[in-house]
Amino acid sequence: MTTTLAPARPAPRTTPPTWNGPGFGEFVGIVALMMAVTAISIDNLLPAFPAIQAQFDVADPNSLQLLIYVYMIGFGIAQIVYGPVSDTYGRRRVLLVSLAIYGAGSCLAMVAPSFGWLLAARVIQGIGAAGGRVLSTAIVRDRFAGREMASVMSLVMMVFLIVPMIAPAIGGAMLVLGSWHYVFVSMLVLAGSLVVWFSARMPETLHPEYRRRFSFRAVGQAVAITFRNRVAVGYATALGLLTGCIMGYVGSAQQVFDTGLYQLGTLFPLAFGLVAGAMGAATLVNARLVRRVGMRPLSHLGLILFVGVALAQVALGLAYHGHPPLWMFLCVLGLNQFLISFAMPNFNALALQPLGEIAGTASSFLGFYTTLLGALCGYLIGRAFDGSVLPIGIGYAGLGGLALLVVVWTEHGRLFRGGVSG
Image (cartoon, rainbow, N blue to C red; front, side, top):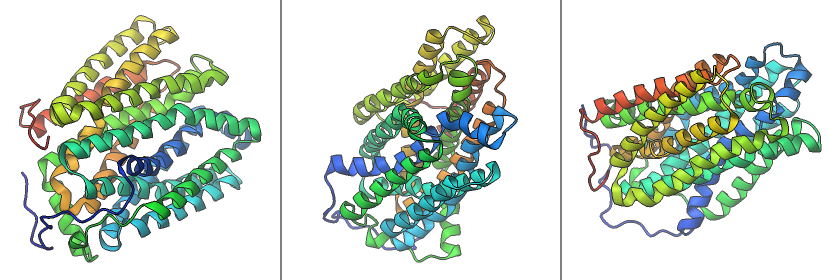
C-alpha cells in the first residue's frame, strides 16, 4: 500500500550541508521548548478551573474540560496549514508567525468577559501553538533520520513531558500571586523566551532542494503520498489513539485529584507531577535503548505491556468500586504512563520515517489527524467522568487494545521486527 514520490524536486545531496546552528544539546533544548509551549498551555491551567468556574458561573464542572479540548481542536486543525507553508517559506518565518498568533490568543484570554470568550481565546491559542508542534517534528526530520531521529525525538519528548510535572505548580503559583489571569501571563513569558532563543540561535533547517512551490496541487500530491503509505497511516492512527488516553487523563485529572475524588487540593500538582515524571523517565530510557534495540521492538513491547496494565487498572477500579487507595492508583497509573512513553515517540518517528522529502506537509497532516483523533477520544473519556477512576481505566484498555490491533495490521501481523532504520 506504499507509494513512491513523484519526481517533483531534485534528488537530495549526497554530502550533507554544513551545519552552522546550535550544538546537539542546545538543538534539543530549543526544539523541546517549541513543544513545551503546547504542554504548559494545557496543564498549567488545570488548577485555575475552580476559579474560572466561580467567575463565569459554569454550572457543570465537566464543562470546564472544554478549555482543554477546544484548545486541542484549534491546535489540530491549524496543523494542516503550517506544514505545507513551511515547506515553501521555511521553518523560521512560519514559527515566528505562529507564536504571534499564540500571543494574541493569550492576551484575549486575559481580558475575556465570559466563558464563551475564554473558549474562543483558547481556540486561537491552539492555532498558534500548532506551529511549534508541526515545525519541531519537521526540524528534527530535516536534521536526522532513522534511529538517530527516534533518539532525538525521545530526548525532546522527555523535556516536553517534564513540563507537566511543574506546569500545575506554576499555575497554582500564579493563582497565589493574583488570579487565573496570571496563568496566561506565564504562557506569554514562555512564548517570548522561545522567540528570542529561536531567532538568535536556530538557522533555517529546510534544505534548499526540498523547498516546494506552494500550490494546492503539490499539497494534494503530498497528502496523497502520506495517506497511501501504510506505515505512516498505521502508526499515526495508533499514536492518535494513545494520545486519546493522555488527553482523557489530563481532562479528568483536576476532578480526580483536586476537587473530586481524592480531594488533594494544593497537593494536586504533586500527584500530577509524579505521574508525569514516570513519562519523562521512560522517554529518557527510550532514547538510550532505541539506538540498540530499534523503534519497532521497543514500541511494540511497550504497547503490549501497556494494554496488560490497563486491564489491571480496570480490575483495580472494579475491586474498589471506582475509588482505590490513592497510592495504589498512582502506582498503576504511573506504570501505564511509563509504558506508553515507549510507544508514542517511536510511533511518531515511524510514521514520518518514509516521508522525509515531504516532512513538513506530512508532519502537518499527520499531526492534524492524530491530534483530532486524540482530542475526540480524550473528550469521550473526560465527559464520562462519574466520580470514579473507571472511565480512565476503561479508556486506556479500550484505546490501547485498538492501537495494538492497528499496529498488527500495519506490520502485516509481524511484530518486533527491527532493521537499520527501525
